[in-house]
Length: 200
Image 1: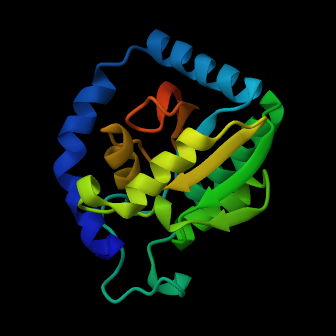
Image 2: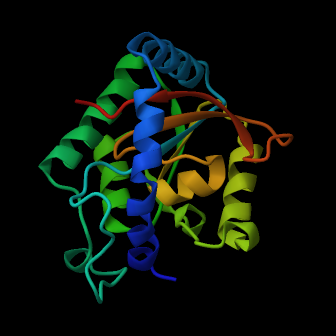
């Protein structure tokens, strides 16, 4: 199934996502972010990043898009490119060591990963969402990638909202980072440490 068909499902999840967002207090969000950065600086953790802002945000790709032709896809806008650069700078300013960067092959994910400029970028289809996660080979592979990571630095994974939802049960906003502590005992391959908001 193509990502354009997959991402059209996102609109149904927006009200639920809004409820979650409104339930977080600024103080809790700050603590959450601090714990996430501390884990990344310590090393041995996974940074699961939704690509930067790519309008319209919940609309998928244009009809007939091609995976090997960025001009046919939904891409980062200037805000999204700025978010990617700022996130990379935040990794550097916090002293986060990045040992490996994997990205979905979609152009908006690849551009996010490359503009972060924290390491050479490899592609992985394990980061592409699947509408049947209960039988998804991709999701199983992603869980294995997360669970097996030991560092010593950070593993950066740049992906899509629906991939994160299949793995963890919620939708991050564009440019948001989810930090996981790998562990084979976790259903997701790792436990949630905290979240880092998209750069402003």
